[in-house]
Each structure stands twice: as structure tokens, then as C-alpha cells.
Image 1 (cartoon, helix red, strand yellow):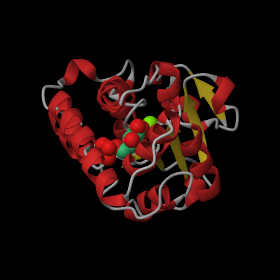
Image 2: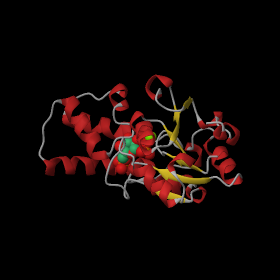
Image 3: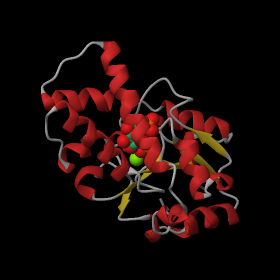
Length: 214
Ligand code: B16
Ligand code: MG
């Protein structure tokens, strides 16, 4: 049986991708090039520093590390500004209900996010009390697709990888789950999440019965 669920944050529990996009787009605009929604797909689940490298690659810009750090911090200030006014209405469909159902069945719940801003988002949306363990970008040294974030989650919950299910919206996150030896549920389209155990369009399609059939 499944003893634990590990949830990615951005794109699974809340829709913060749009705030990341607006901040990256503003940065690209200042640097003098266009950054499209399609470009933004490449940044999902990717760390802040790696995201900046991808963005600069799109603009054909090369910068030294000091300047890159400044730009990453600038983007983050804009992003933190937008998430500071987030509320419970920005929790994605079915997320709260599924978290509640897991807890009611005694299934442990952990966060496994690349974001260093996860605590602000969890606190502003009221999601913090649903988690038995929280692993975010401040606890990890290796970005997804490295399995570190999920292995730390399983350890914090005192469960084995084959008793865990990961919920992810990014290809790199599904790969991280597989490398950790865990089953996974892709949230989004089977087109890019084809390697997940199953793919659903949102957590509204999940139930604890379906979880135990994975
Ligand atoms: P921050 P997740 C990821 O969160 C986002 O998908 C990705 O777009 C972002 O660059 C990354 O967090 C780092 O976020 O700049 O807030 O530290 O999907 O792993 O929950
Ligand atoms: Mg995500």
C-alpha cells in the first residue's frame, strides 16, 4: 500500500507559474528581448539560477556570475511581491480536497518543491498545516531531475520510496520521482509527462482509492 504522498508546489497545488512568467518576462524586456509563454515552459520545475541561464540563452546574452546573481535577485523581488498577496483562492482545483482525504486515511503528506519561496506560498494560502514534512529549495543542493528532494521527503516521513507517490507537473520532476524509485502522478498533459505512472489533468481527478491502485 501507499503510505505517503509527496507534492510538488508550483503547478500542482498552486498556480504560481504565471507569476514566475511575469517576472522573467519583465527581466527579458529590460534586457531587450522577447520571452514567450512557450519559452516559459522550459523553466518549469527548474531552479532559479538554471532558469536565468535558459532565459539568457534565449536572448543570446552572456554575463558574468556577479551580474547573473543581481538579475536573479531582481527577478525574485518582483516574484515575491506578486506572491505576497496570494490567498486560498489560488489553490488549484481538487488540491485541498485530496490533501484532506489523504490525511483522513492516515497517508503521510510532504512537500517536495524546488522553490526557495515555498513557505511564503504555503503560509499565504493556508496550506502549511496539511504537511507532515516540508522539503523545499532551501533544503536541497541538487535540482530535479536529481531525486534528492523526494528522497529527503521520504526520509522525513520515515517511509520507503516504493511506498511513496509523487505528484508533479514538470518532466524533470517525474524523472526525479522515477530515479528515487517512486511511482508518480503527472498533473497536466500526457504529451510531456508520458513517463509518469498515470497522468491526470488536475488533482480533482484523484481519490485515495485511485491512489492505492497505482
Ligand atoms: P524560486 P516547484 C519551482 O517550483 C518552479 O516550478 C520553477 O519555475 C522555479 O524556478 C523554481 O521552483 C524555483 O523557485 O525562484 O521561488 O526559488 O514546481 O518545484 O514547486
Ligand atoms: Mg512544479
